[in-house]
Image 1 (cartoon, rainbow, N blue to C red):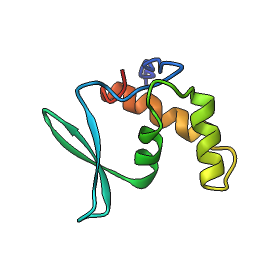
Image 2: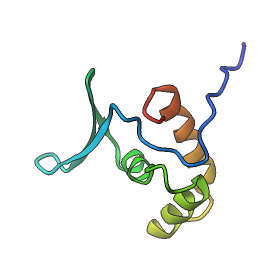
Image 3: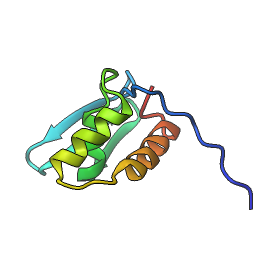
Amino acid sequence: MEDKPKTPVPTRPAVATMLRLQFEPAHDRWLLLSPQGTVQLNAPAAEILRRCDGRRSIDEIVAELEVAFACDALRNDVCNFLVQARQRGWLQ
């Protein structure tokens, strides 16, 4: 079985310009809005994407999340999510 090539993630990831993060209070959920439709994000995905503003580095995003959730060793999970988000076109 062949490994899928990984899409490189920028060192300072940003949500793609055609997308918008929006909190939906009626459902207590973050959404990722695009011209093609809406994606309902789970809490970890929303927390990561909310920090993808093009200013924060991956190290800064990981450090903020580790403090926010009082948990260390989140780097692999965050990086794996960022690769998937890039492959889906959510990051520029």
